[in-house]
Length: 524
Figure (spheres, rainbow, N blue to C red):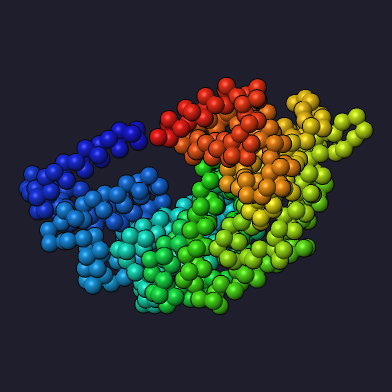
């Protein structure tokens, strides 16, 4: 089994690390594997380097790990970088290009089953369309990207090797093909790249899902690769890779990852993808905005503006006026807008506070309908809907809306009919936005504290609203996250400053005071 193989490899690795001197030279009793010139540590490292370019993911990762473990054990080698430099001096760039991309050689011991050397583009495979053929080519691209990202991010090799026309890498050509022909397209589009066939293709939802997963894996590895080369070698990368690589297609691909990753096939309901994809894009864009020349960044500015203008694909106001509203898209658009504002690839609206007020008003009309008997909640709070509404509220806060524009709604006592029963408007909104409003109030009640008029007019209402809705905040107290507990300490401290007398007479006094004291003891 795979687990048994891992256990055996780990055992061998421990032996070689502890007894490295015994493996420097070959001995007569040691078994020599087929095709090896010697059964020694140096040949082991060279063999492992060749395996790094294979398409089997777990095998490739283990080989990369073993290479990094064994090279420092070689005699007269002070570092992995020194070993790589010596190989380039003696063998040339082709040494590593062939190990990471394969070779056109027909010799069995050097030829990979799948390699960019033989199939730079998907259509180079010269076969009829089939799903295994597509997956094999995507896996080949992933293998090469993994290898190059590893050596560039660690500083073992320099991307200037892509400049060597005599020993040319095919990676950039393959990536350009993937970006323009594969990344934004569907399985049905891919079929048309192959020779015409009498067979008609029908794909199951599982086929589509598997293709999207494979394609999105390449996209993530591509983002990592670009981040690695620009972060580690900004000056050399400008010379190593032609400007044509930073095409309009690449710009649109990255911005689609920002605004609508679902269109590309990413499953944003997967918690890991939902969390890590924006983080990786943020790191990529920070690296690019720091190091890319202005002429290469210009397409990002223009495309971001084009996509978010009033009739653009990802204009927030236009999406909010849709019927029904696509809240899952609102979620990714608002998150994307914040990201692009932060890296300064997209300016904030001209009047951000006014725009935030308009968004808040629009959101309220989408959430609540006013009727004669009682108000009615328009939205069933599914995960997608909640996530979209909460992301929009975060964006409204991000744009700088004033608390006095928002807080009165959270203390409204008007009854509202929701999908879970009757409630007040204030309780409904606080239930929906409890984390966002708590985070915000933890940092913004100073506007009540510092203004006597506002404190007299709204202070008691504000504090009473917090205490009355206290059961909604109890989750933060029970959280294992220290930041959540600090948030409650901050919020309660500011309510005491605003109106300390109210707590003493409030029915929640005993409960809240005990919680506050226990939190102070924890924090101390």
